[in-house]
Length: 255
Ligand code: NAP
Image (cartoon, rainbow, N blue to C red):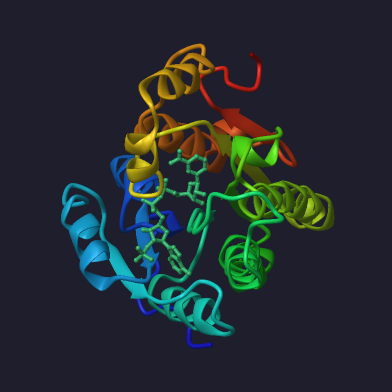
């Protein structure tokens, strides 16, 4: 690999799923904290809209790709490291929930696609950044899991297992790479209204919505609540935290 032409001290983060929702808020949080961001997602126009919000930060670039495509993340991260000389953090946030159904009612196709994006996508993203982080003996990885991977939840037959697997995947990364200076954690958000769930939440009968909201001791969250926690887990303020899954759920799991 060619060395960066102008390496500087600006920390660099890769945020997947940065074109909307939690990923967009996370990119904004990192930019405010002085990080250079590589924005990854499938839809260029969504990534460009996020980039336009990062104006005050030290800069960003865009990689439009499928996180689960073999080689796609490797190439994007290789280019990033050529340009910036470093990658300090990965936020593996891209995720989908294409069906809300029990495992029995989930088609093979929906099952495979959920696991492909939510689990393979996290794996491929981590594999892309790890060699560069190991070389510098420095790096923080945060994957975005879900309360649906931590507790039983109706009609999450594929999504729940995919997120539970992410929590365990990250815990193992922490064990395998801690001695190389890499920290790996996950967050498990409660419900935050985004493109992922807006239509479904709107379709709920009023009493069901009230019950769902009521399970969050602090009410529903905002994307910024999750972004702040992710930023913390990538910052030096969490330098002795690794291998944890942090619920960012307004108290849902405590209820
Ligand atoms: P969102 O607004 O739908 O964001 C998901 C992002 O991931 C989109 O920008 C999407 O970009 C991108 N993405 C999806 N598949 C991708 C792929 N194969 N390759 C690259 N990018 C891909 O939903 P969100 O709520 O912010 O979700 C972010 C993460 O939080 C997900 O992992 C989700 O499971 C998790 N989460 C969300 C909640 C919640 O209540 N919102 C709760 C717990 C966990 P394109 O549209 O361009 O594909």
